[in-house]
Length: 206
Image (tube, rainbow, N blue to C red; front, side, top):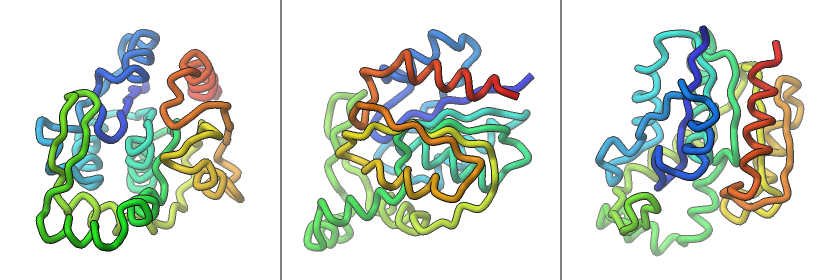
């Protein structure tokens, strides 16, 4: 029996629309809350450690955005425990976009104050995120992915949060990666049936 784990995105939760849709169609799907009731102290490394404890048997991982980056890093670190991964608009190289969007002045202010207001979509309020989130993510942003865990990437060609080019670059020259571009935005919320169908077909294909 292979366990399936779903990792939600940044400033989201297991109650997100995509997570709930997959949960409706995969009743035994495990959807951990990556906020851990302390979103302000979130880091990608913390997510990796949290999910690592759940890998008690061979698993598939489905990850959305930052959850997708986490899934890819887990597959790299623990290939013996992860059979396949599905990445939806994975947040590869996202700190480059953050650095460009925030600018060096605002990044410096964030580092000095250790607080950046982030609107959390599930909590429906702003929460201060500490600077270690960016420092940790930037340290992982140049990670060289080499392990050949079968991977499906689904990415919207109108994604303004994580450019589709980062997924195209990741899939290039990686024969174990199947890449599908969808006519959608970062949320992929208007393509839920297709997301599930492609994921199910990929995970069930032996």
